Image (cartoon, rainbow, N blue to C red):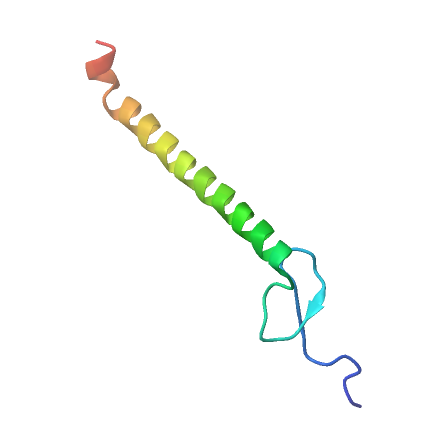
Length: 66
């Protein structure tokens, strides 16, 4: 039995069917993806900063709070 659907990928943003060699379907989706990744990087950075601050307060609480 032959495959009815040829090999393909789906756009990571809008889920449209695209050729296997591509990951995003249009310039609009590429811009949306870049914006999403920028927000994700910012949130990961903010998380790490908060973890470091929390650990710093935890380890140095005797010196800071007497």
